[in-house]
Image 1: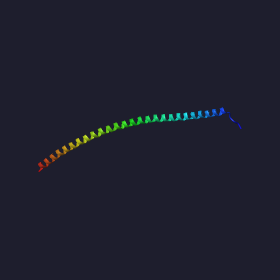
Image 2: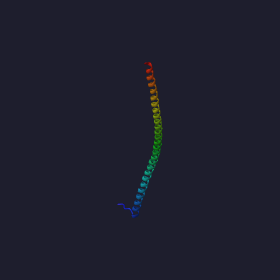
Image 3: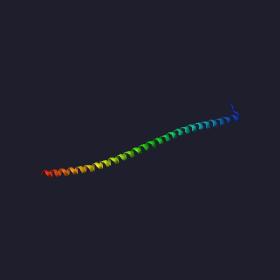
Image 4: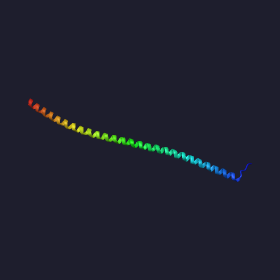
Length: 100
C-alpha cells in the first residue's frame, strides 16, 4: 500500500483547514451582503412608512379643520333657521290675528 510521508499529511490537513476557512469566509461574506441589502431595504421601507404616516397625519388634520368648519356652518344655519321660523311664526300669527 501507498504510505504518505509524515510531512504530506500535515500539508493535507493544513490545506483542508485553509479550504474550510475560505469557505467560512465566503459564507460569512454572502451573509453580510444579504444583511446589508435587507438593512438598506428596511431603511427605505422605514423612510417610506414615515413619509406615508406624515401624509396621513396632514390629511387627518385637514379633515379635522374641514369638519370643524362644517360644524360651525351647521350651527349658523340652525340659528338662521330658528330666526326665520320665529319671524314667520310671528308674521303668520299676526296675519292670522289681523285676518280675524
